[in-house]
Image 1: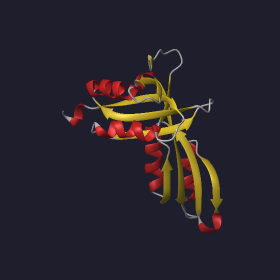
Image 2: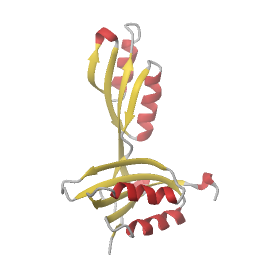
Image 3: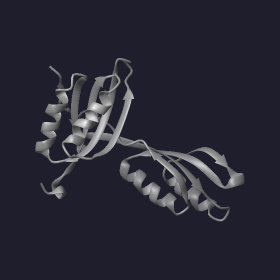
Image 4: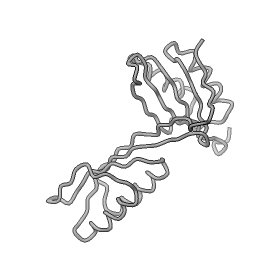
Length: 175
């Protein structure tokens, strides 16, 4: 298979909120030789379940196989494959950024253009911690812009997604 033929696919899984479920899901994908681009997991409003959002780069045939194999895992309840064109997706970034008195106004301009929230500011040491949310592409761009100032540390959540309003996405349920 030519790796340039691969496409990003977003899978949203509803799983039982139990120890080891995430490990079994990611292991299944890794055994097939595919890298997970992004992974986010959190409990739902029903404490019995968690939602896992996985972005993986595969072609269509192996994706169908992955979905079939995921359903063989007893703790998987539902799976929805959400095409990028039908999804609302976001990512969160926290970054610790250094600045100087000379470039603070430039940093403030970058932050204002990206809807950034300052969570902590330590003027005596010329550093801050900020939070930003947006599409993965917007977060990539912001990270590049902040790199000029000096990123001391960064953490990104990975992509989360939901189908757009008015778009019907088939949800496959376990038998």
